Image (tube, rainbow, N blue to C red; front, top):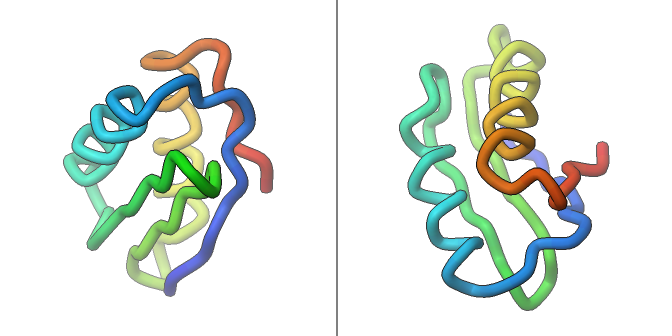
Length: 72
């Protein structure tokens, strides 16, 4: 499954790249793209684990970028 999420308050392109690299390492993530210009995260993961993967990604984003919020 692939789904896009709005990111609120991602500050710079470098932060977006760091988030993207870290999200790609989350167990269950098949692919991830973070676009600084559109403030969007596109996440790809297996359908049966998607909800759990999203929760893990949200926790990671909160830890790495406390001001950034993933909007569902």
